[in-house]
Length: 318
Image 1: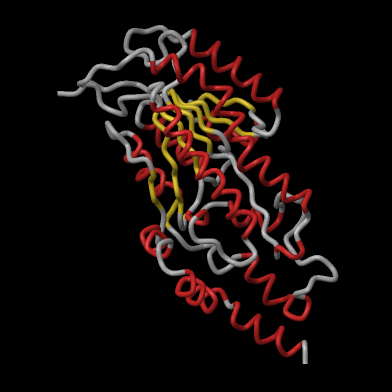
Image 2: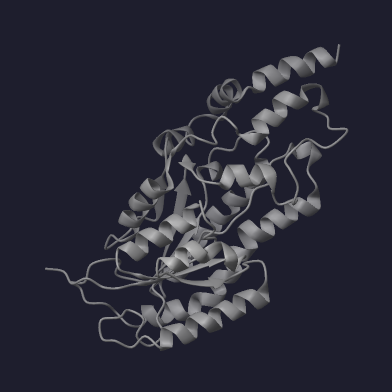
C-alpha cells in the first residue's frame, strides 16, 4: 500500500476566478501545502481564509521574485515534521500559471505592448523558474520512497494554451507567446531531466474563468479592448471587435473547479505525462493541431466569422 506524501507547491497567478486559484484550492483540499501567489496580494484573501499560505509575487519584477524566494525558503525551513515534504527546504512543484493577453490585429499591434506580453508570458516564466530552481533541486536530491503516492520527482509545470498549437485571428501575439513557452518547456524538459526534475506543459482549452473577461477590459495595454483609430479593419470594426472579444466563448467551457480536478489528478500520477491537454474541446484542438493548414484555417475562418469580415473588407475596396 502506498503512503500519502504531503507536497509543497508554489503557484503563480492565483487571482480569484482563475485557473491558478482553482489549482490552489484543489491541491490544498488534497492535503498539500500550497503557496498561492499573485501580483496584488489583496486578491488572495479568499484563498488565505481557507488556510492556504499566500504571498505577493509580481513575476515581471526581479525584486518581487527574489523577495518571494526568501519568504518561501524561510517558510520551508520551518517545516520539519517527519511526514512533511518540506523537510530541509524542499519545494516539490512550481506551477508557472501567471500570464496575460493581448488581442489585436497584427497590423495594428503596438510593439511595446507586444514586448510587454512576451516579458510576462515568456521571460517572466523563465525568471521565476531560475529563481526557484535551487529549492526544487533540494527535493530532487532527496528521493522519495518507491511506495509513496504522487510524482516521483520534483516538477515544473508551465501553463501554456491550446492556442500555442491552434492560433486564431487577432490572437497571434498571445498564441506566439504561448508557443514560445511551449518550446522552452520542451528544451527545459530535456535539460533538467538529468538533474532529477520533471517538466510538464499544461495545454488548456475551454474553461470558464475571468481570463477572457479581464483581457477584454484590461489587457496588457492596460485599456479596454478595441480597434485603434485608423485601423485597416475600420470598415468591419464592429464585427472584428466582436471576434477579438471572444464573447461567444466567455461563458463556455468546463468550470475551473472541474478543470483543476482533472489537472491535479494528472499531475499526481507517479509519472505524469510531458504534456497535459485539459478543458472543453481539448481533444478537438489536439486533432486540429495536426490538420493541414488549409483545412484548419478554412474551418476556423467560417467558425470565427472571418469570412464575413472578408466580405465587408472586399466591399469597402470597391
